[in-house]
View 1 (cartoon, rainbow, N blue to C red):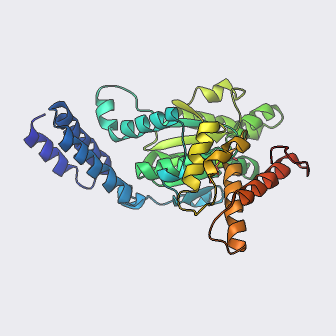
View 2 (view 1 turned 120 degrees about the vertical axis):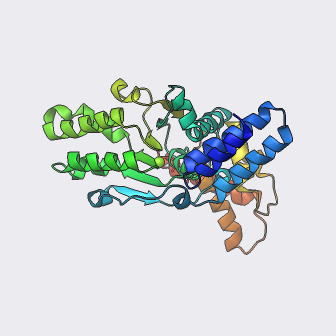
Length: 328
Ligand SMILES: Nc1ncnc2c1ncn2[C@@H]1O[C@H](COP(=O)(O)OP(=O)(O)OP(=O)(O)O)[C@@H](O)[C@H]1O
Ligand SMILES: [Mg+2]
């Protein structure tokens, strides 16, 4: 497109963030195609930095929140940034792709192509599903709303179907990341729906709802279950993202992040060998406990002994016994 036309489009999109981004991306792509790599890189950096510094509110104005939903839906202000999360290269690539697609949504739709917007996060506890929803919403510049499905399903029989409709109506209008935590609750309920017709209606309306909705942002569901999840639920998502326990390299990466600003008298990365099979949440507890020991003993540096003691405590906690690993 001619430069003048792009400039006009850019100015016309002022205040409409999605459109603005799409035009800005178009300008950058044109510069890349013209081989103006330095300019393109610098423009992209400016664009990304401005998105990072803007508050979600500035990017996505909030519509009134449905009153009835207050008990099971909550707005979360993201506290963590992408520097706080360790992701595999595959997941980094997937998220970069999703963000790019979201920013170029109009362009993609104009070509008659679908934009991925319904994601399922799977994996064991403490491996970053909730944290990632938070960081993802921040990167997108969208507000994050967490729906506690467990509570929604169990406590509001009678009014639940109406409430669900309200949530989805909200998500249809409000650009946001709508995060369904404990999505397993839905799968569990499907197992015993035969006994309870109201429950069956609730579960079905959530599934129909997910099927039909074209969110303005993203619908993200998180579950601890693996492939045993009902196929009817499985196929409703555009993308399935796995959050596994970290392997040795990922543990090392995580330890580097955790001890970046901490004074140490040992090499934390060399301790990765002790943490095989631990979740990120468990490793985090070990790191914090070791650092706390040094603080309590008024030492400036964390020692290897502090770390090893913390690992021992974590193993004790996991196994429910005082038995110690021979390695420690
Ligand atoms: N990939 C990760 N990178 C960095 N820190 C992580 C990661 N995963 C988990 N953590 C740490 O563990 C804590 C708990 O993680 P999170 O709540 O995201 O787990 P989850 O996968 O949602 O677990 P659950 O299935 O129990 O809900 C985080 O607040 C963070 O401190
Ligand atoms: Mg979680």
